[in-house]
Amino acid sequence: MTGDQMLGRTSVDPLWSTISGDGEPLLGENHPAMTVLRTRTPVTGTLMGVRRGRSAHLDYVWMIIDSYPVDVPGLPPSAITCFHVVEDEQTDRLRLQHSERMFRLITERLHEVVGLHGLDSTWLWASPSTVEVFGYTPDELIGLSTFDLILPSHLDAARSALASILDRLGPVTITLPVRHRSGSTRWVEVIGQLICDPAGRPYQVQSSFRDVTDRVTAQTERDAAVEVFTSILRTSPTGMMLVDATGRITLANDALRRLLGAPEDSRMTDMDILELVHPDSRDHVLSERAAIAADGHQSMRYQAMWSLRAQTATIWIESVTVPIRDGDGTLSAVLEQITDITAEKSAVAELRRRATRDAVTGLLNRDTFLVSVDDAIHASVDDDSHVAMIFVDVDHFKAINDTWGHHIGDAALRSIADRLSEAVGERGWIARYGGDEFAVAHPAAHDEVGAVVDTVSAVFDTPFTLSCDLTLEISASIGLAHERTDDATELVREADRAMYLVKQRRHDSTRTQDDLGR
Image (cartoon, rainbow, N blue to C red; front, side, top):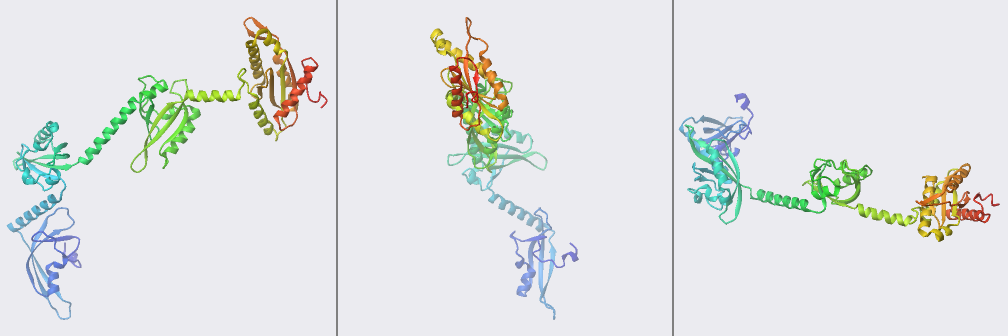
């Protein structure tokens, strides 16, 4: 620095630091000039090392410092200081002492073992941390072979590592199990490198040993857990898969392939889970996956329709999903346990069908029919449409049962039901209301009622073929009710009355309530 640059700076400026001759930091208050100002007595022959600038190198300039008090009338007390740079053998000795002091300071505080070895791995020097890592003092290790500490199972790997070092392949890193003095096994990560003499010949091996027992133990336990998980996944009779946070399948077991009917050599990994989901269930599955990704959800259960890519069969599955989160709670993967519930779904659907359908014809039963018509009546309140109720009673049905048997009677009822369903289509509702009675409800405006009745009546215009050698002509009496009402039961009752009067007159025709004098 120039003289001008020095002006105004203090002895404790961060641009330099100072140490005493014995290597200890020298506080600003103990600098010679500061001592002179405080005591007003000269301080001479002080040896001090000054580190220049902000360099990371511990290279000090060594100086002899003399400081004297100066008293000038009218000025504050001051001191004059002389700096004599030491440039002789003493400087080399001081620098060497300081380097040794710094090396000792570092090695004594390291948790790692720093060692020097002969080319045959014999310990020549070791840092104090050998007690912590190996249970032996440095003096106890001197003269021993490093291989004496290594478990037999890894001796070949250790000898191979030493050979690589001696072959000048650069620093070599290896993880080894060593025998602690207490008898326990410790894992150490060893970094070894070759030291050559000034002529370039191999001279020694320098090493560092870091205790990584906790890391290796955790890795071993994790590997064991992964092995157990993989074994369970592989042998479980339940379909299981691992899905990452993006929805990509990373692991799937054979049970899942069998559940989906996939070939044994099929590759399910890297598939998006939505490739398995039926289009009707995709929004539901996406919603469930979004919910499980949210904080606070530990596991969930959902049902969906699946169909394997290029497969036509669709199955119902139930998935129990378990989130796997990182340490910060971020979802990294989801474990899904898949069960085929197609049979259960079919059983429930069959029970529901039996609860709402007639066992012989498959048409709506009476209760379900009335509920459906009530809903339609209430829905039509705000428009001009009415619900037309047509009551159909099969003529002389008892004679069919008595003559041909009940199985033929049931076949006749099924044929009539099929024709009525085809005639009415999806706009109306049809029920087997009694033994040989059918009820047809249709949302029709007033000018459409006649066409609806004609359509129902035409069902009986053609004979019914019930078996390969039996064709029967079947007729029916039909009654109609078509008025504004809010009660389906009452509407059926009115149509039944109209049908009964038609039967009394012994001809197949339709009588509206107006025709009956209402």
